[in-house]
Image (cartoon, protein in one colour):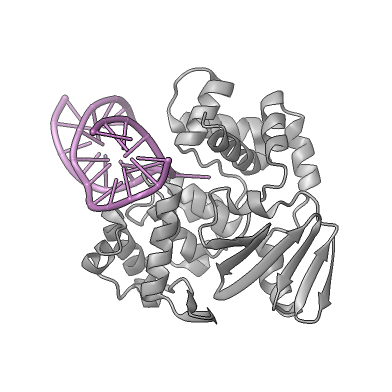
Length: 289
DNA sequence: AGCCAGGCACCGC
DNA sequence: GCGGTGCATGGC
């Protein structure tokens, strides 16, 4: 992998194990819009990024080296050794080999912790389309304008300070359903300091999880997603309905509880469990297992 | 049309 | 500690 600046753009070349379609459509990112062939607008970290992939070249438009280094490099997990990760996982068995080859360009991207907390609260008992709509509605009502393109405005995801102004009644009008009260609880606990986001990064994963579980609407699975997508704690294995289906049918071969599935997967896949989870999730969802 | 969605809190035992 | 249930809303 190499990168260089070309006028206002950053051009990344020789990037392997990267497919922008698969990355964005893998159920971890909800703020993007397809504008062309392998071409997207992504909103993250108060930035609006146009990105385009041409084979093993990625172009990040209208950005700077500083932004690349401070945001996008981490966001797209460009320092992770996917060749190594895949090779270790592929040695395990035929199932995971199949899942990896099915979506070889999937990556676990690094997004904003606070945004992941709210996003994955929204995700419970919901579908991906409606999660996207919910995040968009919240951003447009409580976020700030961070870019304009003609008459289209782009909004940042609201900080805790901005979102804490929301009431249950207001949120209910955004059609996010029963999750409205959980969002209010998350805002209250974060703004009051009952849950200190900055401290989470210094904590061991299990301690950070205990903190996250203080928030109503954050259970075992949502906490795992937050730890993974917002903090890159790879030693988790979020077990949702899709993962449960694929693990029960292809690995465990009997109906067991989700806790047991996570435990099995963490032992079996070891330190790369979460990467395995991401490949398996994508595979299960696309094949409607 | 009706089942279900990247689950969770809350309730009885 | 466990298992059962209701939940807002709309995608499919």
